[in-house]
Length: 296
Ligand code: ASP
Image (cartoon, rainbow, N blue to C red; front, side):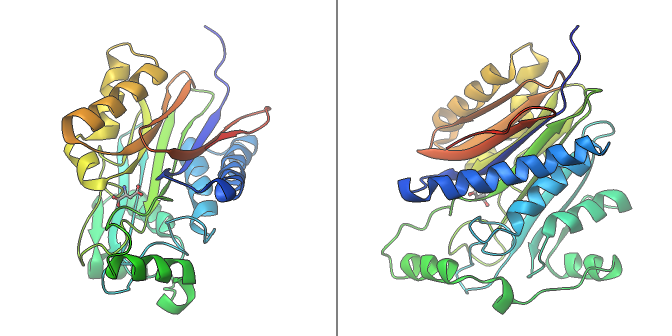
């Protein structure tokens, strides 16, 4: 069997990125994938790689995660993130988190703490405080673009739909150990307390060293009902290639639960795939020692 080349795959959300913005979206994803690859170059783990990649995109106001994330119906930020390690199926997640710059770091701290898997709202803040994270503010993290998008939705001039721009990463190291991470603001104008797929293990994020790892994006409610990332990993168990598994699960998303969205997937041999039934899903792939590939 040939050696596994460590790989990081990143997505910047399923949606419909305007032609003139695609280069910027691809550039963001390429920088994130390269940051994940750098982690491997320095001897880091798959878990470190997906976290590093997601942090780059949380910090980029172009994407719907961290700074620049989309707003609730009340104009506030309720951030969701999750991260999972395939070796022991350990995971950490936060949902309905108030403004913190990098929710994925807090999700990682939840994983490392190990007591619980998912913290919400005030409990997530209390956990973050105990773990030493400093909060940000709405003023610092809410962008004009996010405000304008909410205005359009509230005025009925844009459909109340998901924002696009959710971010995620999956990775496989030279030993076939996988990890996955996803971070988002959710959907534009979402009801207060609405939880999407991104913080939910098996829906938005899944990683298992016996199967592979996936990160999803798109209609959260549909993705939850399809348990999208876990289902894709089960297709890998049945012998499908990542390409086949990704295509099959997106077909299921469309047909069975009428969902729009996408997925990135790696298996434990370092093979990767991206599939979506939206107009675009910006993504990038970085293999150790190779140039970064990206597509929209
Ligand atoms: N899946 C995310 C959610 O429903 C949104 C997205 O991927 O754009 O919260």
